[in-house]
Length: 217
View (tube, rainbow, N blue to C red):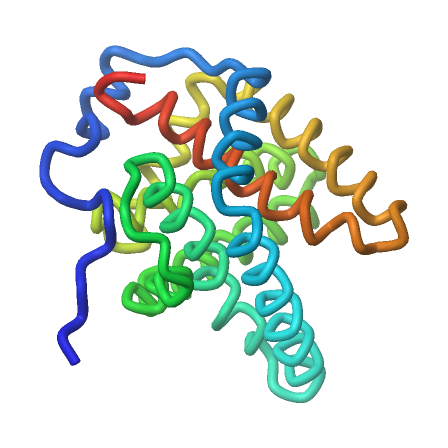
């Protein structure tokens, strides 16, 4: 079977990272969450269904990780990528077949390496001093779409993501905190609420990525 390209990764779909660094961008937390919710509403069944699948796979991987380290990190990046791929499809009125959620696995190696190395850096930063860990946790928050849509290797994605997010780091910290509270609300709603809050959060991060990288927002 022919492996299709990741939607949105065609040349010219996004501003070049160097251009973003030079010209900057603006982040609106409210707009990101609002647009993310609108994207979610367009494909509620697909996003909720995929969240169930992701939770099951992540749970199994977490159990295996108690015996074989890093197994959970193997699937974390590609599974997260599925939300960004589908958000891109919904935003561009593209095909929304459920199988497209798994297209992140086409970029398995760079996504796995991104997740593994960035997690190691964040943990080291947290152990050495809490503040570097917090800084890196936020700075690496957009790495997955950079791997997906820019076709970058894991290290280039890490560096561009860190430098770009750092330009508006406090805005991204605010977004991360708001999304954390949204997901806390999902947990408090008997846990079922996360089936909605998790995909909304990923869609909001995709919307924030659009604010950063899209030629026209």
